[in-house]
Image 1 (cartoon, rainbow, N blue to C red):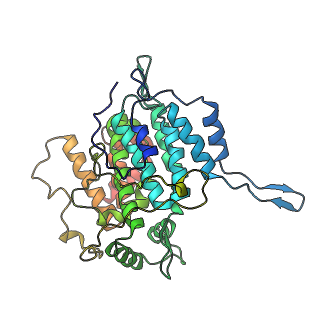
Image 2 (cartoon, helix red, strand yellow):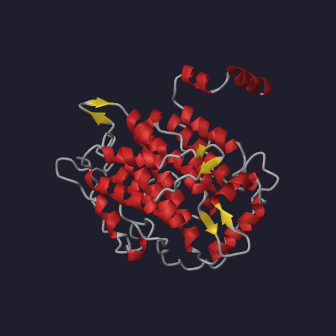
Length: 371
């Protein structure tokens, strides 16, 4: 059993989520593996996109997913086993029911359980003495499918200019669509929300922190088999400039501390209710909005505080590549340089044959000619 000691937990956390941090039993901390549980299969089928049925000229509308009902089923499954697949389904439910705050809750619970039960959470990496991280990597890769749900999260619905994560993503796309909003106007809108202490923005900032915790865990525990969560990371990278200075990009916060505040469960937020979850209390407004303008690269130091005269190891070199990638994601989020640096992180330490398969040889030759 590899449970981390539980730290005191704030009373504002929803009680129905906190109980999942405790061991299911002394001999099986994370309970049963839900892979072949019939209820999990039913839920996975019910949330799959459905094609509209057509009878002659009549097209039957798609049946809407009852996310409150799905959440009830998923919570019952989590009582039996702490399973990444069920946790991703819970995340989808929380997004649909409670928007930004729901996303924050679901990501926090997943990150916290990964941190507390790294060797016991299902699907396990080691079964019957054999280590195979692929099943666990595939389960975490399901997070990439949550991107579509995330895109519909409303960042600001209280002004004349409605803003969703999809709007932000389209503004950063290369090439940018003609009807997409200008990124600078979005930055100004986000700065105003931050200065006003809007809870939606606070939740999205914390989502980014929890995603970083999950990514760091995957890199550490799954290494070369870690899933690529770049699509999810990019969706929240615009909020990096609002994070507290000590909110790291790849480290894990201590279990049970400094995690997103979660409101106590109320009747309005119970499965089956039609209203959205209560929002957390708004944080204190900042004295001034953060600096949103992009600073020229030669005036911005890399997050590590400057490169040393010599790099002593591959790990140290990789840390600087990661720091550079984080800088580009934060300061130039629409630049493809960040994507190239992320691939450099993933390919570092792999065999030459693996790297050659990942990069077309003609493209590699063209790059070398340019040098």
